[in-house]
Every structure is written in structure tokens, then in C-alpha cells.
Amino acid sequence: MMKTGTRQPALAFDAGFITGVDEIDDQHRNLVSLANEAALVLARDPTESQVRHLVQELLSYAIYHFRTEETLMREYGYSDTDAEAAARHIDRHRRFAARVVAVQEALDRHEAVDGAALVAYLTEWIREHILGTDKLLAAFILACRSERDGEPPNEGVTPA
Image 1 (cartoon, one colour):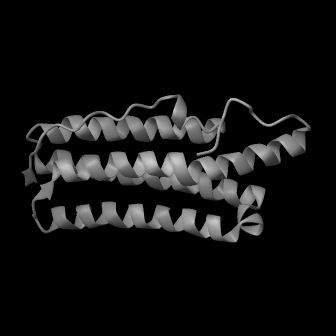
Image 2 (image 1 turned 180 degrees about the horizontal axis):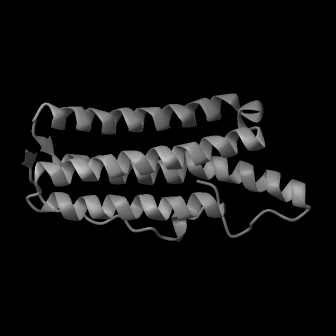
């Protein structure tokens, strides 16, 4: 049930993806790993079952990650300080989940899913999300932690 295409390049987790918030960075490494696994699986001729498993794994982990970020937002009062940025961040989470659910629903209807397009979406979304909204959130969290702990913010991390 897959349309195969050219193999997508792997998404590299490099220093630019480091936010300085360990729990977020660890989860980002896992998301990048899942996107790379998706690229490998979808570049071959996967069975419908393999694709279903992959999509479910991506959705489950993404939801876990989003919960972590949203818990941190509440813990540090992100929406109290920048309600617009917090709302935009959460909206991006919801739109990503809806897109992955749409792929699941297409599979349920036995429709072909364009594997190359899915991988392109995943890698671009992850890249943009980490370098954009997640860097902003992380800078806020690091500033709060620094203020709380009386330490200077992590100087090795630069916001997007």
C-alpha cells in the first residue's frame, strides 16, 4: 500500500539541535532516530503492517514528547509570560499529531501512502520545530532555571 520513491537523506542530530534542556534534547534524539528509521523502512517496499507499526510508533513517541514539553511549559509558566508563543507551540504539536493520524486513517482505508512525502514531512517538521519553537521554549526554561538556581544561563546554546 506504499508508493515508493527515492530514499530520503537521513536527518542528522547535530549541535544546532541542542537546546540545553536535557530532557528535551534526549527526546529530540529519539525523534530524529525514529525519522531516520522511517526513512530506511519507507525506502524499501514495506508491508502495510510495517508502515502501520512505524506510524503508530511515531505518533506514540511524538505524543509522549509533546506532553513533556507542555508539562514544562506549565511548570515554568510559559503561557503566563508569552501566551502567543505557547499557544503557537501547542498548535504545532496538535497539527503534527493530526497529520500523522491522517496517515493512519489513510492506511485504515487501504489507500496508498507516499513514503517519500511522509519522510520529507517528518524531517522538515522536526527540523523546523526544534530550531524554531523548541529553541524558544528551551531558552525560556533555561532562563527560569538559571534565575531559580542563581547560575548563568547555558552559554553554549543559542536560540534560533
